[in-house]
Image 1: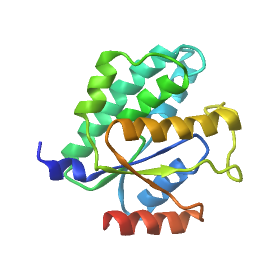
Image 2: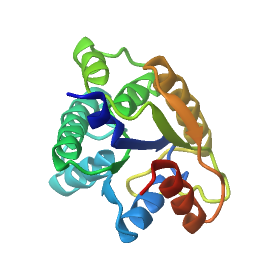
Image 3: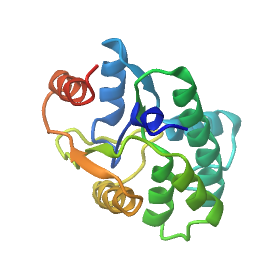
Image 4: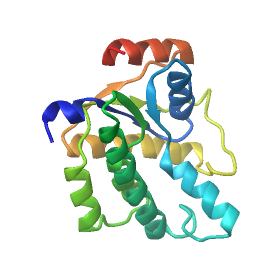
Length: 183
């Protein structure tokens, strides 16, 4: 894999309720190639099937499902040949385990070292004015703030440079990302 292949893959991460998914949806509507958050899809699937691989029920089962899907999303984005903005990345699985106080299994660590993205990662800061909970997002504001801090540390630990997204309307965030990645 050439370095410029992974340079096309841009991650947006952060704590829950910080506007990541709204931003990804707006980027997609503006014609930018995107990849949706896999964690929310897994939660929806598990809830519909009565499964237990939920972040509040079985952390490791959820992390195993997430790592499979994040690695697949990475491969799909690479295979597309396009510049892609991803709603979270492989290191987010590690952040999830860390914020849950759990050890990171070696295969998940290895996946984060193998599945690389552009060295610059966009992070959505804790933003209390837009934070909400729903059936898929059950974290408290304190947990959301802690998740943001853990994602900062995790991405830095894996060698990424973080660029904090401004707390501005979504259209301005879209313009910020588009200018930064030249799409």
